[in-house]
Image (cartoon, rainbow, N blue to C red; front, side):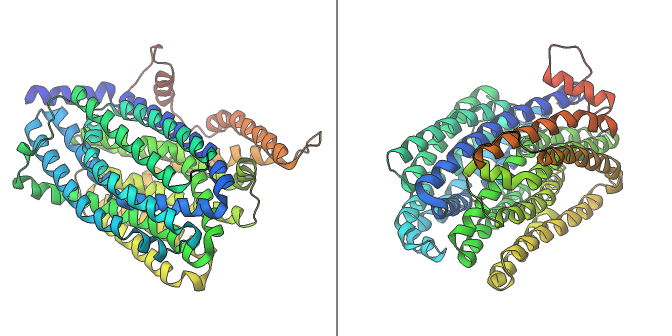
Length: 530
């Protein structure tokens, strides 16, 4: 055990920053593939099903998120247990926790999803689905309910691979299945198949992904065995304290994500729901950097907190916030500024609602990105209370908006969501300061202001390009597409000078980044130990 602990500390000192960076890069690549396939698919779905049909599909996808029962929470808890076992060598405890938790999850999924499959038509009707889409939406919900009951259990194998610090493998599987799923859906749409066929393709892709993770888990961490013989009631106490509360966080998050599009559809109609769905797709693309960073930070944070060094943990927290701001602030600012142009070039859709909808959605997403990081760091330390309170508060605000949404209007609903996210950020800062006596949010102010200044300079350069008139005439969509290319190039050129002007990155951070992008070069890698 002593040798295992020594090797864990040695690993964190020399390789933690590079491991997090490598897994993040693979996460970004997977996100690029996911976003790229969706950017191709969304216009095709709108072309074949109309903007209203795409709005219905987004509601079906939100319902599918609910069907996962917040399995991301349980999966993250399992990932933490495996990461701890790789550090301290106690695989017996990990086997008990994973086996008991995954089998319990299977039972819970069957109990919760089978009734959903039976009463899918009533659910679709209650959600405000128009009669012409009712049968297809109900069939899609039924199919997904059956398949995801199995996939929820299989999530444990994905967690084993990620806890074994091989998140790059799961991202590779994601890229393969996502690409195959997109190709299949495009072919089905071409031959006239609609919602049910799309749902079936998604379900098959989910099963293939789970099987690939199962095979990889046997090789990455062969000491981990998920089996009924490891099921024990003695593990329930720890599972309820940490894993179940983590699961609750994600169930509330899923409910939150599901109620927003349903509320918009119910009060404001399918077309506004489609506009909001397109806006969330754009914002989701802007957040792919953070999505890629979150899981590596969970594994790395677990190792860091286990080291017991307050100085190293404090540096890790500061670097985590800086990295999160770096990968989210500029993309969200870019989408908020040029989002309506992107939508026009992407889908050919023009509506005055797009600009304000995208701007308010980006504002809420910025606050949510900070709050997600706070949740991950809080959980990596082993704490399990305040994040649930934060989720309950956000859900409570949404319930109020769901009741009075029709009276206050669409834009005020989005403003209410942004306000709820902001209050959640302040609350989680309070939770972190209470959990970590050495943590002070004011220490983050300097890096945040520098990032905001660099982002402002970059975006202003992009806005300046939009003022320059085009020297030749063409149709509107082609003109907007070329203009977006010019804007992107201008922002890219201005990015590094803006970073240098604000002194955003230290020399050691530049060396670490260079090592990640060009690992054959001999550069420093101690980002955490700077």
